[in-house]
Image (cartoon, rainbow, N blue to C red; front, top):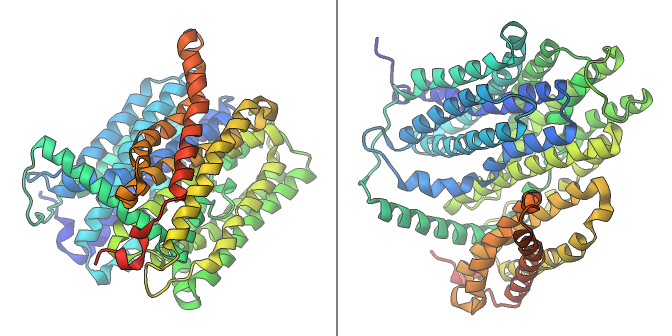
Length: 567
């Protein structure tokens, strides 16, 4: 029996993209809920689990870099995007099966590395699926299709999270990897393999060297177009910071919730049920939230949804404080019914507000995106949002061990409100470039330069911060990443106006990205010469980065004026 090509009909296309997004949600639910729960049950601390979940989101923060590669390298035999979807799903399944041989918690480092590879291919798959949707769905299908795609991701999270936790009681944890891989391959077999993608116009087999050169050219074009769009208007510029800030309180949607569930005595089946109901509620709320924002206005509704996300978090904080439950406790104790009930109430209420927020948040980012570069600019906004999630997961794990649950929940509830200060500026304007773009570019360069230089006194005295070091370190990681991207894009926008600083920016940018390696500097202790050189670079690289950024802040960014914009 030959399976149908779902892309051939309207209903088939909607079903296909619903199913494809299930494969994107499965790994997220598996890692953030099922694996995080088992790690806590095996005695792994909240900080390590937070770092694990943060690494899971990290590849999604850089998925914009895969776009040109997916666009350039094509297959006539398997189809342009279909080839990438098929290849990435096979790798996703293979990496999951590799995890069977990795013991936990002893092999958590290797486990995290394999999942990092897994999610890198998951991010590539996301780019290919979105590209296929843009080129396959008709305009009157896109609204419903996007709603179904978000719902599919929620169903996938329920399968990877709740489904695995329900299964563990009967098969054990190791078999769950087979279940998750089989779930992904089921979509491959029933949807991707029968799929017939229309051949792209002008498709030609490029030589490998030409393909890479073409990809590099598209990356450069991406950098220039995105830079211009981001600083072109007040709304688009504010959108950068809006995306980098947490989209509301996040603790009840990350590992903190599953950690606490294990500690208060919930079984795997109970954690699975909680995750299942929260996923169902959130999926429904996504559709409702987007619909209400169309009628009542984006900014008004998003303000209400985002602010409301802090309420369940504050309620759980209050209950924990009342019961004297402050610091993390070893798993395996007697169940605490009052706290279990409070966790259920707060998590389900949070799922409502988070779902309402999610669809509306994406819609308002579309509103401030320049249609000419929608694929690049919107993808970058979403990538920054994933980076914010990764950072939140990391600092919350550290904060729980340093401050306890109530203080961490309070900090999360307050931090989640910070983005609301930018909402008034998130108003769509008729044009996508104004006369203030130069000033925004210079201001960004100045602020990033000062932030890079601020690293020097911090690193000289970082030991004094004690257990709060990772939290401040996360802030500087964000500074270094933003500075590197600014340098790479800014040098292309300025061109000859950058002078000698243009070449310096090209050399400094990758070194700033390499500053993330400071977390592994301890491995050089047995090589004193290399350790001394690495210690020196930890001062020299941010210093050089700060100098170059301050120099670019003094340049004339005339290429950003409306008159200089390409037609």
